[in-house]
Length: 266
Image (cartoon, rainbow, N blue to C red):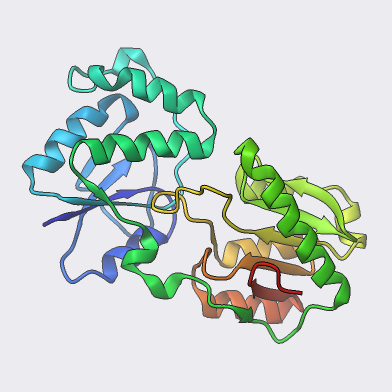
C-alpha cells in the first residue's frame, strides 16, 4: 500500500477509493465523516507527527487530501510528543488564510518525504469539462454576470477568503468566506431572487489544488435553487463536479443554467 487518503466529509473520498486498483489507507481527520468509508486511522492536528511516522512505517509514499474538512483548532493539552517539533509550523498555518494554511500543511507532508497528489490526478474525469451542461443556456445578462464574477474572484484572491461569489445584475450580492459555499447561499439577501443571480465558483490565484480543489455537487445545485438563483457557473478544468449526471438533471428540473465556463468566455 503506497497511497493514503486524508479523508474529510462527503462522498468524494469513497469515489477516490473505488477508482483505485488497490485500496488506499483511509486516514480520517478529527470528527470528519466520509460517506460509506471506515477509517483505518484517525488523527487530530495535535497528533499529526505520529500520523506521519505511522504512514512511513506502513510504506505509504503518496497522500491525497479529499473531502471537506472544517478549519481545525489546536488544543495544547492534546499535543503528543511526536508533533511537538511541528508546533511552529502548525501555528503559522492556523494564523494564515485558507491558501496559506494549506500550503503549510502541504509543506509538512512533502518535507517528511510524501508526495501530495491531487484528486484530479487520481480521478481526472471528475473535473468539469467546458460547455453548457444544462438544457437551458445563459442569456446576455448571465454572461455579463459571469464575467463580473470572474473579476470578483480574481480580486478576492489576494485576500485568501473564498472560492465563490453570487452576482446579480452585475452587482456582488455575496462572497464566500469561512462558512463555505453552503453558508453563502443560505445567507443571501432577498434581492438575489429578483436579480436573476448566479453562483460563480472557481479557484483563486495560487490555489493549492492538490489539497483544496473547488468542488460542487448535487447539494450545491439544490442550495442554489433554494436561494432563488438561476444559474451555477464553474471554471472549466478547475472545478470538481461530483455526480455530474445528477447535477445536470437537477439543473434541468429546476430550470437553471449549469455552465462550465472558460476564463474570459462571453
